[in-house]
Amino acid sequence: MAVTIKDVATLAGVSPSTVSRVCNDNPSISKETRDRVRKAMLELGYEQAIPIEEPITPTFRMIGVVLPPSPRETFENSFYLETIRGIGQVCNPKQVICTTITGRDDAEILRSIQTLHQTGQADGFIMLYSKKDDPVVEYLCEHGILYVIIGKANALASQTICIDNDNLLAGREAAEHLYQMGHRRIGYVGSGGSFLYSADRKAGYQLALLQHDLPVRQDYVVEMESLRSDSPSALEQLLSQPDRPTAFVVSDDLLAVGLERMCVQKGLRIPEDISIVSFNNSLLAQLASPQLTSVDVNSFQLGYEAAAQILNHADNPNLMATKIVVPHRIVSRESCQQPKGLA
Image (cartoon, rainbow, N blue to C red; front, side, top):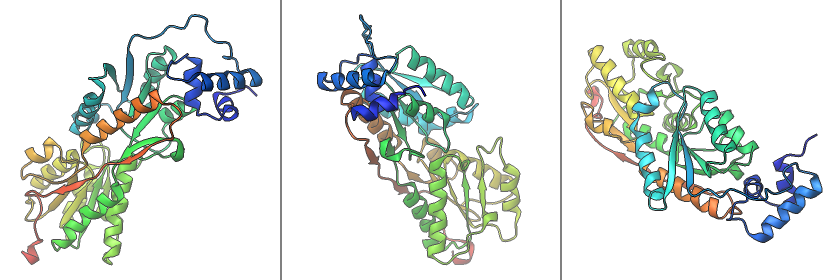
């Protein structure tokens, strides 16, 4: 069986990303660590044990910023723009180039990352999302490439640098906000279950219901990638039920605006008939009519912390993986009020 970069890392007592940097003659690696890794390479017969005689040192540093796979909806979500603004706030003064990586699916994104890695152009990657069974993250881990996830690690949690909100708590607080207003029939509209942030927000919503002895009704939950392409009929059917929810927790402002539009089409008024608490506190929440009560996840700070961590770990490759939780808050606006019977 061929010797892998992980075998070398284990023998040398370092991370796979450190071995990768030694192979690329990264100047941030100390002589002691470099010698230890080279020795492990020779002992194991690793094929890249012989260093390049004249390594090419790049004149710039580059970070790849990876957006979730999507044919369209990602580019309409201001959460990602605000996160990228936070990344730029850290990278621009340090003259670090940020390149945005997009694609219609995982395969297209993976090809772009492979090209940047194989040509040695990128120092690392910031993933603006986290999801289950992600082949992109699997590739980064397998090749010892430095990366940071904005979100929760699905695998190798102890080895993954993560910047996240407490989405479980935020989902619970959003549902609790509606409960305290008097709502007892509370629904949930979320992104596809593969995205971990939405799964945690949904779990928090369900936890709040259970804590108040309210039934967790599966017919009150609609999950979709967008109102344009996924399950709008399921949401329309839910709104048509005689015992429809009087309020919704919605995992994203973009979906909440779509929910508002569908309510108008069904002759339902917001907040008189339907109250909404959404997430991200984006410009969409303020431009909606009525304006949306929304959980501010501080997307700018998520990006800022992700950039600070990836540059810190690039300069100090032996650091332990960092976990940072960015606080959230509910911003109350016009989309919520007591249900009719209590008003």
